[in-house]
Length: 247
Length: 114
Image 1 (cartoon, each protein chain N blue to C red):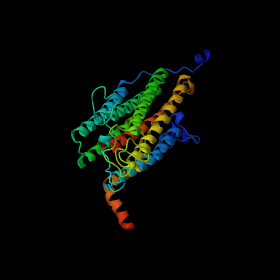
Image 2: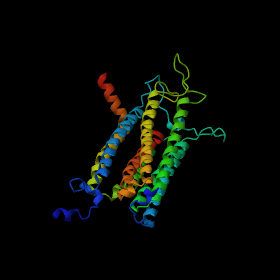
Image 3: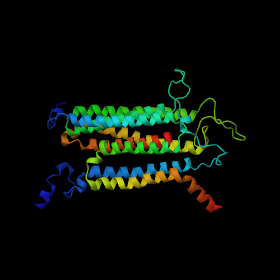
Image 4: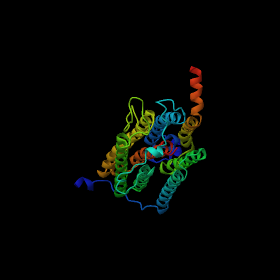
């Protein structure tokens, strides 16, 4: 009986197999949190390594090529030639940031609607979230394509025996040392993979909402779990934006 | 399609306008902070050191609102809050250390090898 009294404030869906809910969180939500912490370790490893390489100030690696200022690398925008703009630093990545933040907002609204058992609103906001994620992925694809193909002028430096470099891959980089391109591909690529799996998860959950799985179950807690993951993706982007594009 | 009618019926609670307003308030803050970062980036293309510190503080502000409000961590139990935040705080310290002391660490390693 004592256990009943202790638990009367915990909702039934939050109870674990043993009958108690540690930290007053359901099993799924708690495990999602600890997964996200471990995932944050990986991203921090990337950003740590990037910060180390970026602020080492040793141009002697790779034929005295200086580490580039990201403003001068990511200054392109789709159709900017049409508008006669030659350089628009940060504009495109700023728009990507807004898109991801907005998709995070619609995810919060979906969670909120789920708590009210409003199936239609959950469907609507889940769809907006999925659209935001897909648009973000499209932007990233464009950015990668632009980065890989490079500009018509090529690199500002000339390597002995090779000459100018056009575009970037894992071995060479027209904007600076190859390590810069490597970090770009690995950090934004790893984040993009997270966005992609987030979109897929959201699609699966959206399908479940649409066929009424959670209506039958009596609660929409699953939306909160994928919501946690989706916000984490947004959160990581906030850090990538600062440490890769601003600093 | 008959199956749809067999679902248990749950009453839809009307939305609490205060909650919705709070979500949009947080959105506004996030957008504003990003806009400030933007303006700073255009105003100071030379990236002085104080600007980098400002960026990091603004990033933490954004992270706080995303984690506390969107991820709802601010409304969870204290033990949960700390078990998430303490390890991440240490990691963030690691990133800062690499940003600021990379030169010294690198020279120390090279010096050791030489």
